[in-house]
Structure formats: C-alpha cells, structure tokens
Image (cartoon, rainbow, N blue to C red; front, side, top):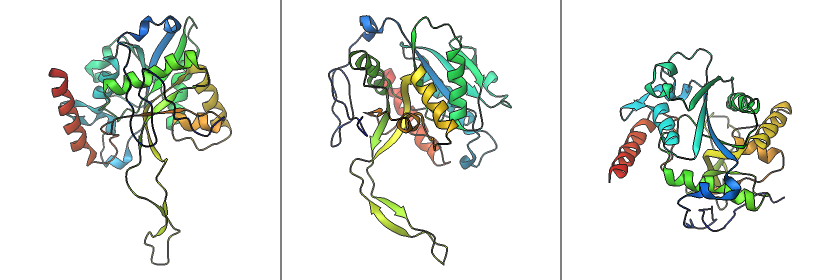
Length: 282
C-alpha cells in the first residue's frame, strides 16, 4: 500500500501537491444507491481542558461571536443534512454542557471521555459499536475547538464515502492544508539553553492535518484499539490508521478552519465566524 494517497476523481475536491483542484459536487448524493445503507455520525472529543488557553474555563466553553466555541462547532455539523447524530465525549466532571441550549437537540448523544483524545474517541466508537448494526456507520471525528468549519469542506470530505463504494482501497480521509511556511527542526538545547536550528525541513509534500477526519466505524475502532494497545504515538485518527498500514486520503481544506489553541486565536475565530455568518445571509 502506498505511503500516501493523493486521489483525484470526479465530483470531489482532493488534495493536489501543487494546487487545489475543485470538481462539481452532486446536489443530492443521498440518492446514490450505494449510499442508502450508510449512516454518518459525527464524534467530538470534548473532554480536554485546554491548558494552553490560560483560562479557568475549558476552551470549548469560551465565548466567541456570541456563543461558546463548542456551540459553533456543533451547529456547523447539525446544519449538514447527511449527518444524522453527533456523539460528544465529555469530561466526567463536566457541568457546563448540559446548560447549553444546543444540548437539548435530540441528535446529540453524550458519553464519558478519557484522559487523552484517543481515549475519548474510542469511548464514542464503543458506544456506536454496541448499537444494532442496521446500516454501515461512517464516523466523522471533529475537534471541539474548530468552530469555523464550512459546508463545502464537509461536502468534499463526505464524498469519500461514495468513492469508497466504488474503490474500497479508499479507507477514508481527512481535511488538510499544505504547509506554506519554511519549516525548521530544532537541535538539542545548547549550553545557553536557547533553542537553535538543526536544519531546514523540505516542506514540499508536507501537510497540516485538520479535522474532520472520516473513516468507517469498524476500521477506525480496530486501528485505535491496536495502536493504543501497542502504545503507538497517536495524535489524530489518521495516525492510528497509518500505524496499521492504511493510507488515508488528503482532502484540501479551507485555511480558515482553525483550531482555537492559544488566547490570540479567539479574535481570529471571531473574525472568521462573523464573516461566515454574513456569507450565509447573502
């Protein structure tokens, strides 16, 4: 199996090493016969505390553009007609989620998350695996702190399900963006304790992994279980599949799909959300 898959096919925007190629997206992909037995469930690991935000409040509950970050994230997913349910993995001590108006939406299900992201994702997958298997389930894992997700990115990513029906080698994929900045690898700390450059990393072919990330439930669950059992370094869902020998597809995503990580990200998220709101009105 190839180490990476940059796939190009009709009706979908796939990653390209030099430029973004956009193809038309079917208006009603649900009518495809191969997709009538598919159920799409979003999964949001929201059990973290976001220590880098330097706030007493977990970052997913910080307010931006009039709502909490998590509310914006959930709303972007709930607005998509193909996403039928959303599982939110919460910290056992969470008392804030139930107070959100959006928490009463019947499509939202909560589970108890774990200490690490992978543990929270696996908790959601375990819940799904215990449900009656009337349809094939694809799981769309999305960061709680990525509130600026756009419909067109979701459309392009979900097209992978149709492509998988035609080409089973396509195991799923993720939104990603090509690295634009010059990348430096840090050397071991010098005697003065200041970080120094070891060398410049060739950025051609390097991509930032974003979310959502989309995979079939059984495959993602099996790969996460194996990776965690063997203590592999798992930083996202794609890395679990890569560890098990699979090559997820890179889907070129929008640059404004930012993850709120540092305090200064809040102002940028507010700008993008305000712009997104204006675009939806036009």
